[in-house]
Image 1 (cartoon, rainbow, N blue to C red):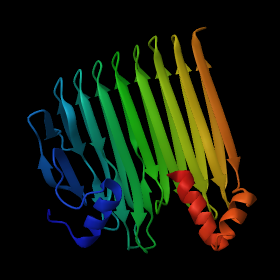
Image 2 (cartoon, one colour; image 1 turned 135 degrees about the horizontal axis):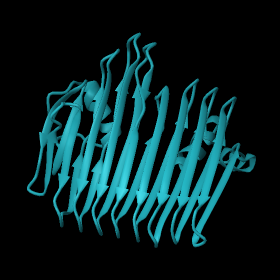
Image 3 (spheres, rainbow, N blue to C red; image 1 turned 180 degrees about the horizontal axis):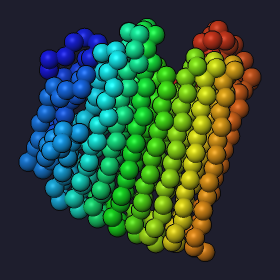
Length: 308
C-alpha cells in the first residue's frame, strides 16, 4: 500500500472502496499532496502547470478502463481547492471514481473544494461516482464544496452517482451540464444530514440538442436539527425530455426545502418535476417492530433501504 496512515487508509476505503493500489489510471491525494499516480497507454494524468489540479486525457476509443482520483484529509485546519479537468475522447467507455473523506479531530475547520470539469466526446459513455464522508470528534468542521461541470458532445451519455451519507458538517454542491444532440444524463444523488449539518445542492442542466434527455433524482434524509436545500433546474432548448425528482424523509427537527425549476424554450421540450417530503410511515415502523426490532433499529433499516 502507498505511504498513508491508518486514518487515511480508512477514509480511502469509505470514499473509493480501495484497500490497495488500484488497477488502471489513478491519482491518490492525501493532506494536499499526491501520494501516488499512474497513467496508462490510453489515459494520461498530469499536473496542471500552475499546480492547481490535474489534466486527465482519455484517448479516442478507450473502453472498459477506470480512473481513481480520491482525496483524503486527516489534518485539522487544512483548506484546499483543486481543479481537475477531464478530456474524454470519442467512442469511449470509462468509469471515474472520485470523492473526498475528511477526518477532523482538531479545533480548526478542514475544507476541500473540488472543481471537476468534463468534456465528453461524441458517442462516449462515462460513469462518474463521487462519495463524500466525514469523521473525527474535533470541534473543527468538515466542509466539502464540490463543483461539477459537464459538457457533452453529440451521442454521448453520462451517469453520475453523488453520495453523502455521514459526517459532513457543511456542503454546497453545484452541478451544471450542457447536452448536445442525442445526449443522455442520469444523476442519482443520496444525502443524509444530522446534528446541525447543512447541505445545499444546486443543479442547472441545459438540454441544447434534439433528442437529448436528463433524469435527475435526489433522495435525502434530514435528521436532528439539520437542513437541506435542493435546487433542480432543467432548461429545454430543443426537442428533448427532462425529469427531476426530489424524494425526502424529514425527522426530528430537520428542515428540507425543494425548489424545482423547469424552463421550456421549445414547443418540443417535455419537462417533468416530482417532489415528496414526509416522515417515515407508521405502518413501516410497526411492521418491522413486530419482527423484534426496536423503533430506532426499525428507523435505521428504513433509512438504509431508502438511501441504497
